[in-house]
Image 1 (cartoon, rainbow, N blue to C red):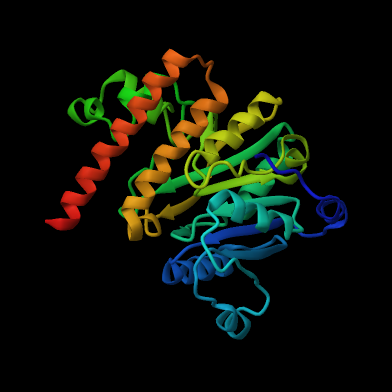
Image 2 (cartoon, rainbow, N blue to C red):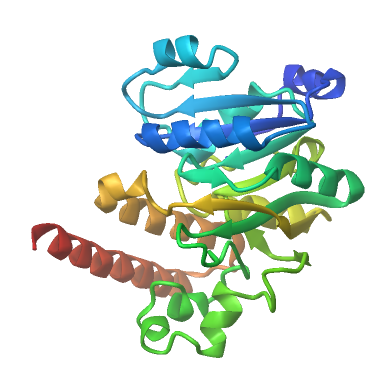
Length: 302
């Protein structure tokens, strides 16, 4: 279900003097989260900002934040509500003109918030902007994709065909559609590990769709942006590091299941449907899920 902004949140947006609200959904990634906060404090200059932590973990860190980061808004959910619902909670507590959603396993390399904020100020038709993302070894992390199609079932990042022939044009067109990661480009969708969202645009399209527990919510919000006339742009002047999967690696089985549930949710939402096609797609998603679960279990056992 797509959530809308409350009247109170809209009022805050109009009167706020805060430029950027950092919104970080935390789930059992406390040490990386502290590193991220430190880089936010170190790198973010010449801009007004707030930091909002929405914690899906069971154990509260409220006393830690009160002692060490008293200016941070810390919200404990007491259970894992998933990314979309937790992010929406953070958005409702935010007062910034722009929302910078970051994974807790990211680290800023430069003044990401200022650079993205200036870019959005200069381009009022852009609803979402994302940074260049690097792996820990400084290699490029492919942080934007083409919208999923039926071809993506065979040429996605984890597919057998992509692994056998990684440079084939169909996989490349989906996984890495940019000719250069050093040039600003309009794209279909950006990774939710780093996206700055114009709060004004959320008044039009609504918040994250909470039918997506985790995965595909970034694809969905970018698609809704574009359907209603907003641009989604990759902006490589802003740079951060992302250590993929620190939270999800703690429960690989659940992560695999949730990924495939989100695939099915996305299919139901955006693709033309009839019973025969639904059956084929459902069988494909379930088969893919089972095969990845088997691989994960073998790796865990051995």
